[in-house]
Length: 418
Image: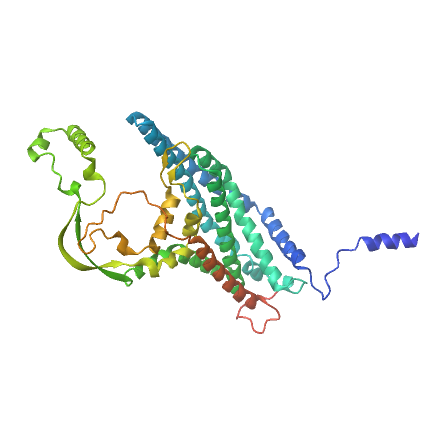
């Protein structure tokens, strides 16, 4: 009888730690993640924040749907040809989805730093960090668990926006592959921002300071990269010898001033439209001649500083998006959406600027200034961007690990221990 009772009690003992007095990595990280998420779920403000996020994204989506409806109504009223109308419909649909996706990323970049930067500094301020540090958890396990919990918390905002993204994708007739890539890249960016926030939270002694520094780093990635690239173009330039290009539309004068004065504004607009339709060669975007003396000019050369833009979260999302331009299955031509246009602008920095000079050395090259942009002859930038962000997260994480590791030799003045 006593043996059976002893065996039953022995079977109910909690799992024993690994040899050496430490928990296994997976068990330790899962414990921290579970604790963090349970604290989130107990907070009423967490649900309020998710609700506000859902409502704001919904309002923007509905507003974009309304603008798209107005555009469709205008196309129907203008009596466009079916092929052109289908092309415009696809462009409006892709603009709708890309716009909502960019808005979700923007809101998330505003919310994620505040969630992640409080992960460790908040425990330090509350006096619970030291209690956690004297358990069987290693410093790396603690930081990894905090990071995963912050990442999952950020992903909850994407989940709240999913219904509206689905509506935008269906109405906009966006391919499932483009939707999947967009969602995955936003999740990856959430992970990067969460990693930055948790690392800064471990480095900083105060929660407010950690939040502010995290926001500054996010601002440096989003706005600072653009500013740095723009400033670099003032110093990175190349010289070319060229003169001015003249287009037929610049010199065409189909109507005299006296004839235009006799027309009403509506008649003048119709007359110009008929003239352009009768002379398409004047409005093809190709120069007709080179005029003026050939002089030495300086033009920006972005090839040596374009890499600065790669770390921008918007650049990573845009460049990773599948290319939607060109012919589609029904034979119509799809115009590139906002994300594709951002990607084209990003990859433009890889091109030799001399290629875009029309009258190079006084010779007419016949470049089409109205052609549909593309990414041919360029290489993807988003892997470089993720690598740069990863190096930043790894560096901050190493620093945070050093600051958080125990036993600590010295602590900053005013640091709360317990």
